[in-house]
Image 1 (spheres, rainbow, N blue to C red):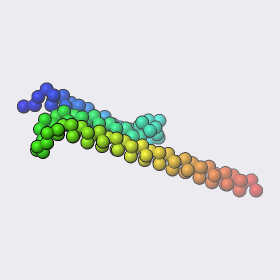
Image 2: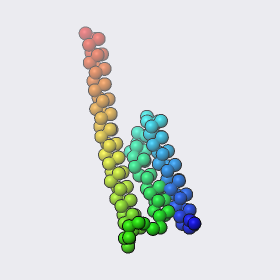
Image 3: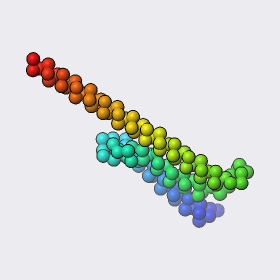
Image 4: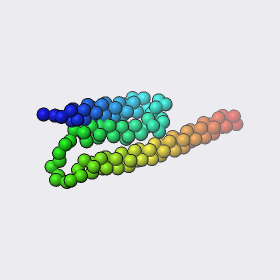
Length: 120
């Protein structure tokens, strides 16, 4: 039978899954929105996973690995995952922003050349 802590952990896990998938859906269905174009919105799928990972940590009481500090190891591993996963998402955001800026400049330059060609 599940303890109160495990039931709470399951609720946190379900909430985390909803938040995580909602962050993805926002970027997929509304990619041009202010939220999706911001660093916070673009990287939300990376950092919101901390909620469901916390839920998993609260659910699990025992491990098949007979390690003394298993819960502390799990927390540390989850935090390291979050840091690197969010950093990678932020770097992807920066790269995408540069590419969008470059593409905008190319389009503007091409439109300017076409306009100048029409004036001749």
